[in-house]
Length: 259
Length: 274
Image 1: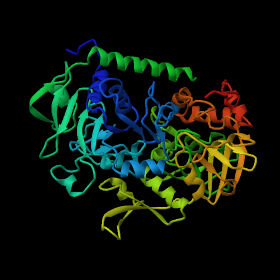
Image 2: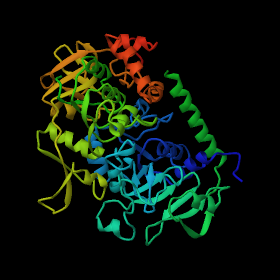
Image 3: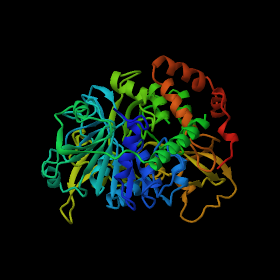
Image 4: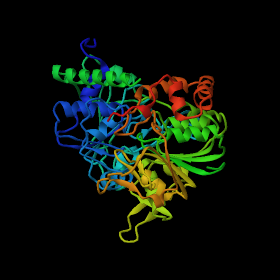
């Protein structure tokens, strides 16, 4: 039974936050990654350097930004640079340790689609598109991905490959000579998936408290590989929960005030 | 601005030239090619109002909220008219603007490798003449007109902006003509060295429009109205509600101040908080 003291979304954000090492330079995607990165900064990783693609470097927002370029980010940053500088000097220049991404669709090798559902010319759903993700996925030294796990999002075949994960598995990514090593973990609301060391296929290595392996398998659109020993993610600590909830409350209050 | 122009209204979440976009809608400009890295609400409005034939972009959503329903309707259903799209990643668009500002034919970057974006035909690969590394090349962006919003200009027309400055400098310098709307015109910019100043002779025209970036923000003047960005999700979701809103608040108002007052909001031009 799910623990009634925290929600699946809270567990996801906190599990994702724990993967971000203190001191890392992190290129932060908006939404779930931004929440996780800031929980990390406010708990175990006070020295993390948060970079948002709009230009601010070293952000310490009090409330979560709604957009990737809210004033809250530039006002709390060490520096703010232009977009061409951000993508050339900082991202392609190899200065990012961890790229933190979300996704609309993901496949078993952690390739990502954020472009269209259906045919490109006649899409059933037109998604926002690439943004910074393709180059974050290739130029960051490591990549973390966080999204909610459903069979609609975790698909056998992507409708469009927007950003590369481990391509077609094995050494296929290595052969492309990309600067970064690709996704290290996919953190969902049900558990944690990590790439197999050889095949690079995403493997269920941890389930969150109260979640069964069967539930994760059924929420995946391909026959999910399951580790021989599946760990249980440690539940959120009182501090982690408090930090996340206070952050969310401050954020909701700030965004409502501006009406 | 003329019908059929290639137009960039730039602004990366900050300093988005909404007032200028509204005026383009009121003047019923048609067949525009719209360029912008992050088409957000103002391009949703221009597309839904039928101004655009084509869109070049790298991320088209309502940041933190969801879809741009007018953009989606144009791409998915061809309403109010079909919209051709030229799609990039941010790194590619940034390189294309920088090349445009330098009047170079293309921008170069380490990107796009292995993605389906390559199949769309907007990117080609070249070999570095020194190392042999395979690199992506994107054609330079050269708008007929670029429009941006900035914090200040002085009486000579020198323009100052700060905060998240996006690709606005590149977009102005890449364009054949340019217009800058500003929060205020002052006697002296008092610009610290190395702040972003566009000297008057690279700017076509300066126009004071207080609050002209609402519902985006102007750092040092007013904050991003995140509540409006959330409300837009409901307004723009259906054609009828969108059209009624545009008719009342954009076509039915003469100035940006009237527009904001029609929403029952305090005019951002009156607000002076940091």
